[in-house]
Amino acid sequence: MRGVPKARRLAAIEKVARMLRIEDLLKRKPAQLSGGQRQRVAIGRALVREPKVFLFDEPLSNLDAKLRESMRFEIKDVQRRLGITVVYVTHDQAEAMVMSDRIIVMDKGYVQQVGAPRPLRMLSVYTEGAFHDTPVFDRDHPIRSTGDMRTWYTGKPCERTKRSHINVCVYDSTWEASDAFALDDSDAVSAWVKNDHLGFEVLYVYRGVVRKYRPDFLVRLAGGDMLVLETKGQDTEEDRVKRRFLDEWLAAVNAHGGFGQWRGAVALRPGEIRDILARENH
Image 1: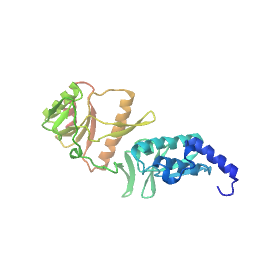
Image 2 (image 1 turned 30 degrees about the vertical axis):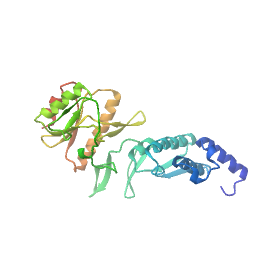
Image 3 (image 1 turned 60 degrees about the vertical axis):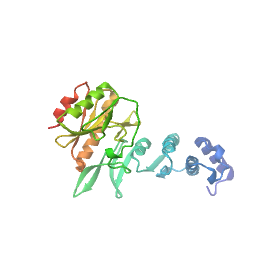
Image 4 (image 1 turned 180 degrees about the horizontal axis):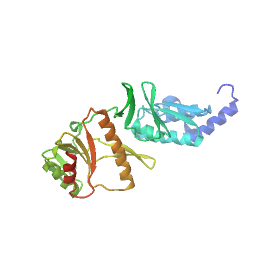
């Protein structure tokens, strides 16, 4: 703020400090600040200049998960209160959905998609003279395996299995136990696994909040296709929303073509799973 009178500079600093709740940090040295405090101070230094546009280039990448989540909402709150435009660069899909009013997906320096926040499970990539849909994978764990599951302990009922990749299945209900037995007994099933501690989840947005959908079972059918199966299904508004996002995820994976064919199904009634397996294994 060169050329700005000292009184005006101090007034601007005090105003921004109150807004960011960092008044008690103004006299500290940088080494005396925590990661989150340094981020707030950095934002404050930019705010006192009264910019028309903010550029944040992965500002939270070095923070732990809990602090990163709280800072997302602080930045969004500041943006809403000031009514300024923020360009926010991130590779984190959930972060993009929480932070943005519009999302721009770029690939190799070119804009590929522009739209409202949603889990961008499909990315249109221009290759060989045409656009093709390809899934957006978790950059840290693009492919997961049952072999990655860590040992865990539980007091819930459990039984050994024949066709599951994990040799013990834990049951959360008698309905789930019945479905697990049906999977083990069905000729339509080549292999299956209950989605416990596997990390298989589909992000979805419901009423402005990013949530995680974890279907109950992953099933490899005798014909070779994969089935994402939800049991104890309900038909609330939120259930319909999360299934739409699952449909988008399935479409992206199938368009990619590198992981076989995937489909999804929901058992809304006890015992319905046998009919689903017979229908899907065609």
